[in-house]
Amino acid sequence: MPATQRLPLLDALRGLAIIMMFSFHFSYDLVAYGFAHWNFYTDPFWLNYRTLIVTCFLSVMGMSMYLAHQAEIQWPALRRRLIQLGGCAALVSISSFFFAGERWISFGILHFITLASLLGIWFVRYPIIGLIVALSAIFIGNQFHFTLFDQSGLHWVGLMTQKPATEDYVPLLPWFGVVLFGSSMMYLTVKQGWLPQLQTWQGNGWFAQRLRWLGRHSLLIYMLHQPLFLGILYPLHLLYR
Image (tube, rainbow, N blue to C red; front, side):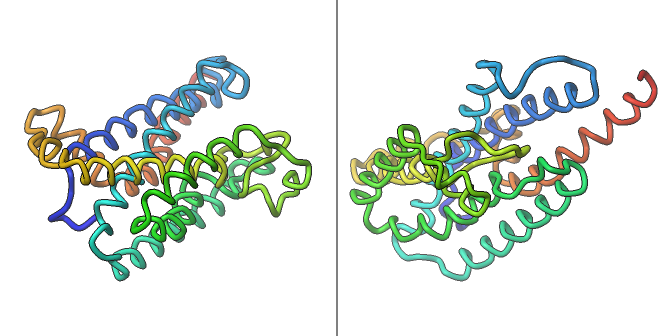
């Protein structure tokens, strides 16, 4: 989003989602190194917590996308963003191949955001159609499952009968619906004249400013936080194992 169109509230919401992501991933790393014994694959708490975090990120993404491109699609900024996201997604896949083995990340959150950014931009000027597609994607992605999509080459679509063995998985369906729903809600906010009310919140308090900073640097933070966590926990693992 261009700096002149940034909405402090969205940056703060994204920053809050990052803090939740920190708590999730650090807890996951504690389990990986044997410091805790939670089950992230079957425990409803952790499954629902992850769903909440991803929902927060992607809905804010949709809102930001609408604000940034509502008047005119900013192609140079979009190209730069896609290159950044695609490069980071490739780096995640390559590094996870060496560290996670068979559970490497072939289509995780960054892969999804890259594709959703490319597809979602076409619905910014057609928010009503976007809302219909959003609700359809959420419904279809949650209610329909076919063995056809169990093939590894189609995992990115969703609609599988079982989740693939990977450390991160955010398929197009139903999650693209969450992005478009966020975009449609921001359209409604602008159309109803509610945007100036949201703009009055500048988040000048200490905590709000930190949230906004996190939200403005979310991609860099995403790429760095896990190596940092692992760098802290690995020596402790060697010391206390």
